[in-house]
Image (cartoon, rainbow, N blue to C red; front, side, top):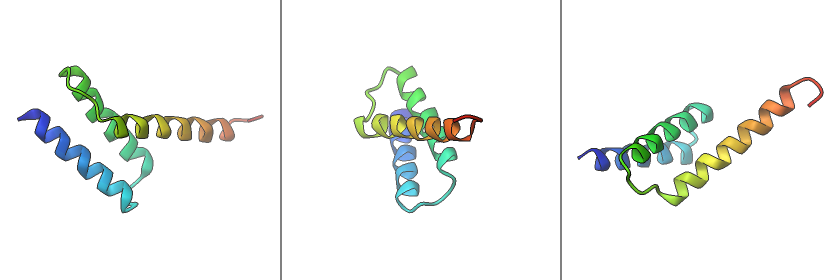
Amino acid sequence: MAFERLKAELSLLVDQMEGDQGDRHEIYLRIREKLSELRAMGMPLPDDLVRLEQEFEAEFAADKEAEEPGG
């Protein structure tokens, strides 16, 4: 079942984050991809992962702003 597969993949991503394995930006992109798949199927989104996605977006936006000249 596609939903169960997505849940398992999301769980793996969270485990990777907790173990600080891999690149944070790559994990963020993978979470976005999986949440997009859930949205496309009309499935409910896990609140904690939606919140995590938003936190990553804010973190990376702040990083980008700090890197820009005059930022």
